[in-house]
Amino acid sequence: MTANTIEKTPVTLLGLGAMGTALARTWLAAGHPLTVWNRTPASAEALAPEGAKVADTAAEAVAASTLVIVCLLDDASVETALDGVDLTGKDLVNLTTTTPAQARTRAAWAEERGARYLDGGIMAVPPMVGIPEAGGYVFYSGSRELFELHRESLAVPVNTTYVGEDAGFAALHDVALLSAMYGMFAGASHAFALIREEDIDPVAFAPLLGDWIRAMVGPGVDGTARRLASGDHDDTDSNLAMQVAGTPTFLATAEGQGVSPELVLPYFELMRRGLEANSAGQEATSLVDLLVRKG
Ligand code: FVH
Image (cartoon, rainbow, N blue to C red):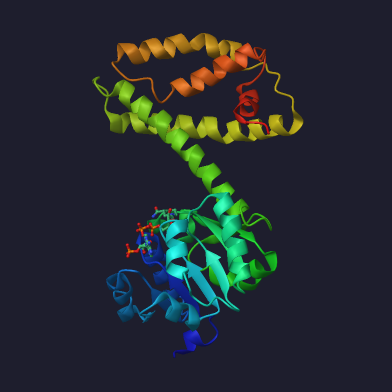
């Protein structure tokens, strides 16, 4: 053991896919004793030259450290990997992407097995791991005490953001942000499709699109949040009636460019519903409540 590893918390990591491997390398580089296990052993063995201790089974890996990180494909793979494994006295941190309901069930499941539980939602892709300037972080929820206890070790690969005692909140924040990302990708895909068959260089178009999205999204989400908090959706600058009146122009342009409107139609339909619900003079922020199914 080198001087670098003496004070560092031992970590066990289950799952060495693209993300797990990126995480593993940062703990190794920071001098944490790291035990790894992966269903397909080759990915674990590849880390041995970097100092990882390779366990033959998940049970052996879990037994090696109190702090056990899980980064597997989905909730079902967590169930499979940890089936029959003794979790007594372990601090289980699950970074696998799941639904909020799965996270809450997994927390209860872990506690029944004598483990403390934290759930995590990773807001980074593997190349951002270990590079603080890249801006990645992980949402954590569950026991604050457990989070504080391991905060330093958890912050080694990417920053940490704690979002509450409810074990489902990390997953909910994760899925909410990723859902917004997919909406943004949908809009960008539609925009690129509109120019696709024209003499417009997509590389020259990209900064225009990127700058526009940034200009709209930043102030846009802050305004939406303020309006949702106050309940005051009245507007003035870009009301719903004006926006709905513009949708035939967007649809006719798509038709003219030979582009399917499938990605923008759902939002246009929501705006139409908003207008029907007498939100004509309101901001599109009032549409959020139309999406929520009550009861
Ligand atoms: N990679 C990314 O961009 C995203 C960024 C945001 C967070 N996600 C989530 O992170 C979890 C792991 O993702 P990943 O990128 O590491 O995924 P893969 O490279 O596909 O590796 C999957 C690992 O899961 C193992 N595995 C799958 N099924 C089982 C099973 N039934 N039993 C045990 N292990 C299983 C797989 O093992 P193997 O195929 O190598 O044997 C990999 O270790 C994920 O929740 C993302 O949503 C990543």
